[in-house]
Every structure is written in structure tokens, then in C-alpha cells.
Length: 118
Image 1: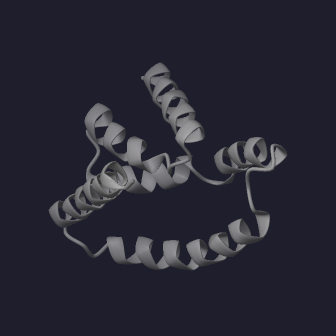
Image 2 (image 1 turned 60 degrees about the horizontal axis):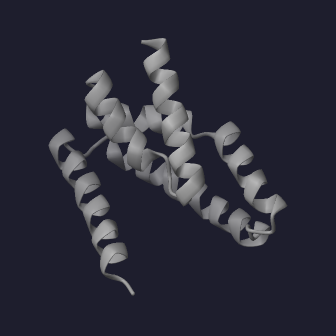
């Protein structure tokens, strides 16, 4: 099981680093499918995995090449901190099936917009 967890982390990290999206888009479904977690536990576990050490190393690779705006990133982080706290608290009160559906609709909506955008 340890190797499966490490392999999933490696693959999600590579994909996230290449296309610059939150690893949770891949990590949450992987935790549900491979480890049979419920939606809420998968989301919480994903957040634990994506804390500072992961983000700082990926950020540094982009920043070194001049491909990151530190000021905007820090402002986003401030908002993300407050929003993450509020969202994490609120998610504890949303029924499991509704939480999964919200997650799926967000993924589909973002994917459709990107697919159809010129």
C-alpha cells in the first residue's frame, strides 16, 4: 500500500506541476477509487498532502524562471486561507452525496469552459 500511495503522489505531483492545477482535482478521485475513502475524508486527506512543502517546491521552479507573480500569489494565499477555513468548516455540514456532486459539477464546468474557450 505504501508504494501505491507514493506512486499516486508522484503522478499527481507531476501532472500538477506540468499543467499548474491543484492536485486535488486528481488526488481526491484517486483517494476515493484506490482507497475507498468517502468524499469528505478524501478532501481532507488531499488538503493534508498539498500543504506547504508541495506548493513551495513547485512554486520555486516557476519563480526561478520568472513565471510567478509573488505579490499576487501572496494576496491569493491570504484569501485562500480565510476561504479554505470557511469552506472546510462548511463542508462538514454538507451531506456526502451532495458534496460529491458539487465536486463533480465544478470539475465538469471548468473542463467544459476550458475545452470550448478559444
